[in-house]
Image (cartoon, rainbow, N blue to C red; front, side):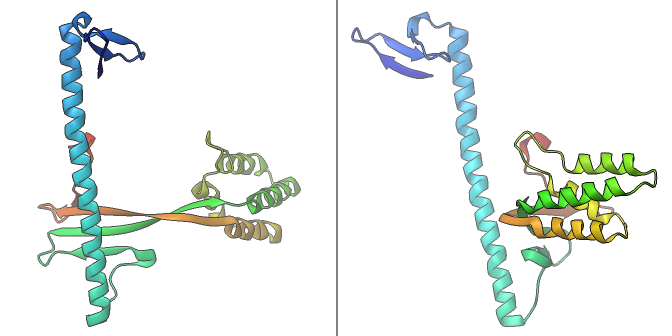
Length: 206
């Protein structure tokens, strides 16, 4: 709680409603609760800062190693789009640096939806209702006003031989725009059965 003093030097604290309350009118249980909450939050902020520093340092070490390998040994580590997998010498530990893309559709997705609707309207093979439900589900808009890229891309897995449908699938591909990337660090340890188990840094899973 925030504290203040009036002209009479009476200690005051601001409550959750924004009101200033004299210190001597606050119940001991409320004061103790405030101390517990603030102590835990302060410790959590320190841990968050340490984790952030750990991630930055770990990512830099991986990037330095990849650069060194490429320059001195001609070794290409990892997979596509910057993903890297590193193993300890004994194979017990595995590090994965994964790079994820943030994608969204531009205005061309509406052209793709129109082409798909025209295909469904033209077909009369009895599967229209199911396909319509699948398309409507894929193109549903979230509360934030966005269309799920992965849901729409799942339509491209349908094996439909139709020129208009194929044009619609191409329009979907053309409408994807990469708006940014995020790097993720995943740490694994191999158990007694040889399986790699992810080391959780999530407080809820500890």
